[in-house]
Length: 172
Image (cartoon, rainbow, N blue to C red; front, top):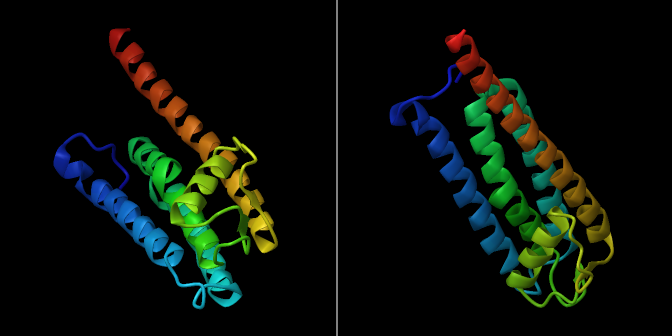
């Protein structure tokens, strides 16, 4: 994945990886946020939290160490920023259960997904709030949002600068 993709065939592995990220995060959110109250709780929540941490570190390493193409990095980080990370955090919140066990005021999957996006983007309306261990998760999610936004902007600026410089060198 060292060269910049130019054709659909070049983009195919990246698009498949991106689709996989979207599908897996959507499934994780659906499954974990739809657990029964008897199944959800600290044990499932702790396992989901550990799984999320491993996933975040592995994806960060993957983007930095293995994806050399700025165009591919930009696409994958954009998808992570827009859909994957908030869905995975919502899955973890849902795995702890509802009715004020993790997110005060959350009554179902849509509430934790909403809370996740509000937290990830650091908007923080205040209508739902984390309690217990989910307070630490919410802080981690907000920090992840800052970092991903910074990486996404850096990749976009780098890509623009590189293409702009390349065009400028051609004209000279």
